[in-house]
Image (cartoon, rainbow, N blue to C red; front, side, top):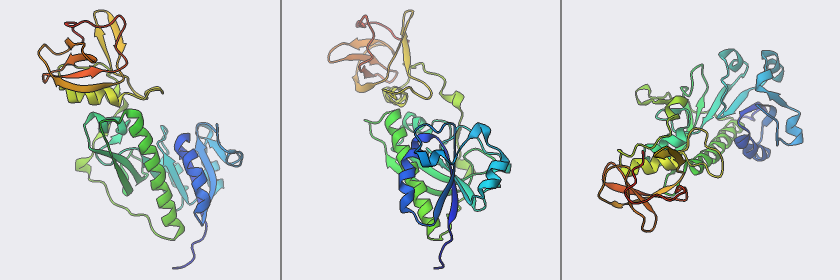
Length: 291
């Protein structure tokens, strides 16, 4: 195999995955980091601060000066225009925190939980003028368990995204071409940020769906990027960040059926969820109706 010339790399996106990837670059040959595009240079090492460019100040002149071969982007709320993407001579890649084409768009890690998936993952895809629609290069999954929350799945997608980018850069460093696998447009589903605006628990649905809805919004001790599940008792609203699955019980949906070993709430399928540490004050009483 012919020796590969150094590939000039620009990284962009959220700082959390960028900071995880930076220490790994030293072990990858033939890759030269020439720019970092983000919203802030907070927590960047001193050397990387020297090559930082704020996205808000980014111009085509900046990218032309970088003479970059590759852009690798992590979960950025901003979009690169085709004009800007054209400055990357070999290509531009995006590490999406969800499995494509089924989970395009916003908060895919939460939707994987809400949809009761057995696994979630991350996808490295070629960037185009559309959102999350480019051909897939690499994809990796991990299992979801009943102990997972929105935060834990998000953190696993970050780790997986970093691993995918590291794998891709290793391929590039060895002179290999990244795969180009077009997405199946018939399997594509796109989630808009507005799809996650509703935070109200619908007690008429099954206990399993309520359990998934509640835990998907749980990013404690951090703030949720979208919603925290909530419900009402009379005029009072309170949030629920965790619950567990209970047994079958009599009563209408939303009713407190028992206070034994937790607060049991009847759901639409006749089973209950048991509230966690977010039980309101004053305590609920058997017979109270939430909603």
